[in-house]
Image 1 (tube, rainbow, N blue to C red):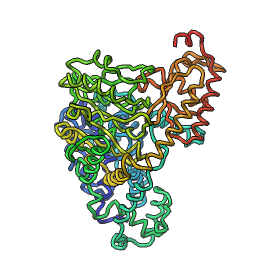
Image 2 (image 1 turned 90 degrees about the vertical axis):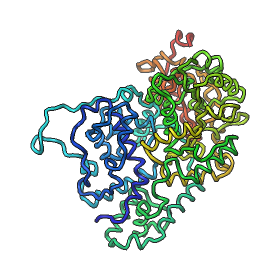
Image 3 (image 1 turned 90 degrees about the horizontal axis):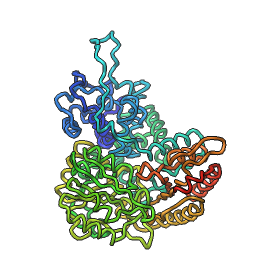
Image 4 (image 1 turned 120 degrees about the vertical axis):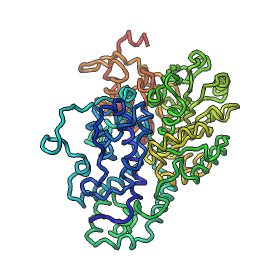
Length: 626
């Protein structure tokens, strides 16, 4: 069976998953392009699959811009077999990419740009893959699509050895420890081990029901003419499709999904002849950008036009593109520590130099004006400010920001990335203040926000950049060559989220109240632990306690805990609690604990940590020196 009609709708929504990996592959192997294979990639359908022309990225996508961004040459772009492998793999797992690109360097690179893809899109692509497998009878789409290896019996043999070198900027990137710890804890959980995961920065609340309902209705409107789409299939075809749909997406509550024809039409949503499932404008739909402008004006006191808004696949991509747009080799970017793990890597990837400025727990990990003055020079291009902060939960007061703004105003080259993704998760009496709203700072500020945290929409992958048009146009060009526009369905969900009311309305307020209750309980318990120091967070959903008094401690039964990494490993292996070591955030004395988990899980996690600490005997000299 071959599903005829337009599959373009499928790939319009799915390409955001596959195309970034193609771009990452090109960037990874561009360090020595003159050594690439001279044979061009095949343009015909591989293994007999009905792949639409719009999916054939080798013929339809401008490839030279990706290489220019990496500093590589462009004339042999057609001779990159590893890049074609990335296209063949599509949305495969990180493990597949590690096999293809040696020790996961491509995986590390892609995570520095955008974490994962839209969860709904990934499931839809899995469904499409499984359906294609049934059609062709092959055991693996990836195997079927991949070029056949040379065995010396078919085609010309080659004595040349494959060049596995990487772009030096990519090779120098550090892997994300938050992702590593979260992935390891997930693997343990899936193997049946009772691990409590407090590593990932992801709300445990469900996406607001109003957002889900609007999105569901939006999808269902595309299935109105079910018979037109499904009339070409016999009952056996519909039954097979139904089986696969339910296997991938799970049983839906709607009774209509039990009907084979309706399930087939649901799959056809992605191929429906409807402009709402096609590419959106690169910068995002006008409707969503206008809603973002309204939100920024009403909640933040910021005035932007729609052409000063860029919607991306998550705030992580927004930040990366902002950095790439304004930083050049030789520039410096000031990053107060503790920092979000990706800031330094994004700066390094741009060719600029990250300048980390340590802050102190007794100052609530906030950057002081005198610290900023000490590191400013003619090379300084960018300053990162994150409030509320990941990983500390610290919030800048208005007077603190005004003092920093007075310094910024005296340096013509200095711009500010204001990461405001946690703005709504803040605890009274603390208040959020947008840096761009301060006098003279609008022209200098690149404001980043999104939907993942406040609206519990991490899997939807939707964020945005608000900036003066000159900078916004540059970031927009980068996005046009990397991913193009964000998923159309996620954008519709984002619009629904902004319509919940001021600051997310009652739904978000209830979530914040729950976070505050958890914070208060966790702070009380951690402050009661011997040797643990803590700054009380005023926002976000993280604690960042100092456990350095336990470094050098002897483990009962043998072994020593020397640093935060080993302490986190101890907690994971012995206590079955997943935490993130502080050196990932630029503060090696601390651990990050996410309290985005149920009250029951948090209470059990604290109990396990307390029992674990009793197995450690602290060395007196270590306690004294801390």
